[in-house]
Length: 225
Image (cartoon, rainbow, N blue to C red; front, side, top):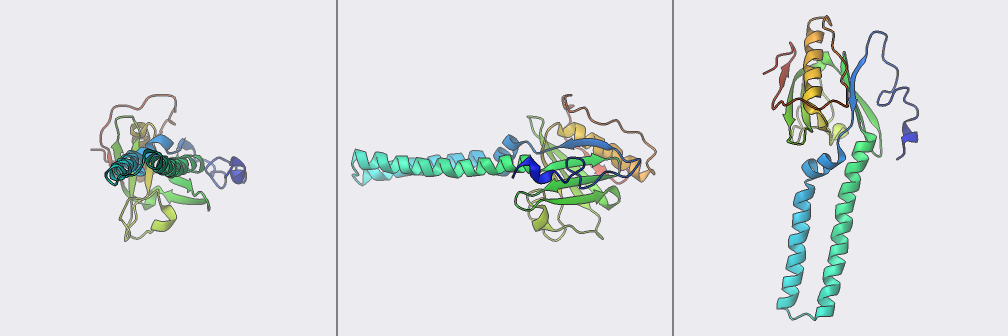
C-alpha cells in the first residue's frame, strides 16, 4: 500500500476537513520498532526460533546425522525462521505506515487498516475515561474507555484495541512516541470539553522530548492522578 492510497484525504489521517473552529492538537503514528517488540513480541519469537534451532542441531547430533545433512537442516530452518521474523517486522512497518492518530480539541480520530483502511471517529462525549502506560523509551499506549451506551467493533479496531475486551472494546493508541505529552494534551482536551471548551490547549511540538510521567488516568472532567 502506498501513500497514493490516501490521496483522497484532504488532511493526512482525516477523511475531510475539520469544521470551522476545530483544530488539530497532535497527529502521530505507532512506532514500528516498539510495535514489533512489545505488541508482536518480536523478542520472544526470536528466542523461540533460536531454541528450536538448538533443538534441531542437538537432536540431529544425537541421532547421528552427518555434518553435511545437519548443516543443511540448520540452514533451511534458519532461512524459514528469518522469513517468518521478516514477515512480523514487515507487518509492524505497514501498521506504522498506514495508521495515523489525530487528536483535536473536540475528538480523537484513528485512521488504520492495511488491506481495508477505515477511519474511527471518537468525539470526547463518547469517552468515559483514559489511561496511559509509558515505557522506558518514551513510547507507550493510551487506552480509552468508551461510554456504555456507545460501541465500537473489536475486529474493526484490531490491533488498535485492548486485548480480550470483546463485550466493551477499548480503543488503544499503540506505541505512541512522546506518550506522556500526548496523554497530557488529551487530559486537557477532555477537561476543556467537559467545561464547554473554555480552556485553550497548545498543540504539541513533536520535536520536543516527552516529560517524565508514569501513569495518567483521565476522566470526563479531566481528572489526572
